Image (cartoon, rainbow, N blue to C red; front, side, top):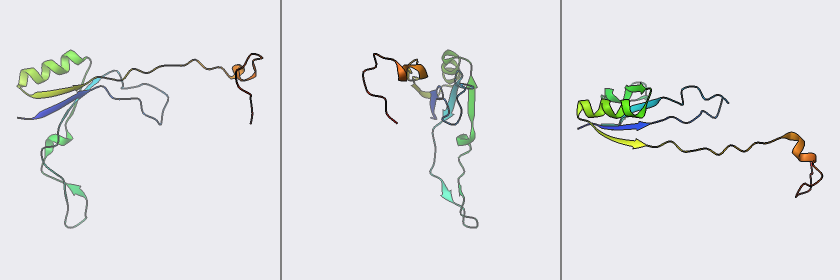
Length: 102
């Protein structure tokens, strides 16, 4: 039976936006190891489920999809991030705890 991974993707480090991080993604676990192509040396294999990536608007929709098809799944909960409000002017406050240096 196929094993699914259900998760919410993290924000990319290359951009500051949060596009495509609110959807839930369903991926199949690798069924077989990749093997190098004898001619070109590229990694490949016969496992086509590795190419499937489904997107859902909610976690419940993704779980319902797996349940309808009778597939085993593992849910990875998203990590919570702590946002610290920073201000450039705080570097020059008179009551600053540490010295400001270059």
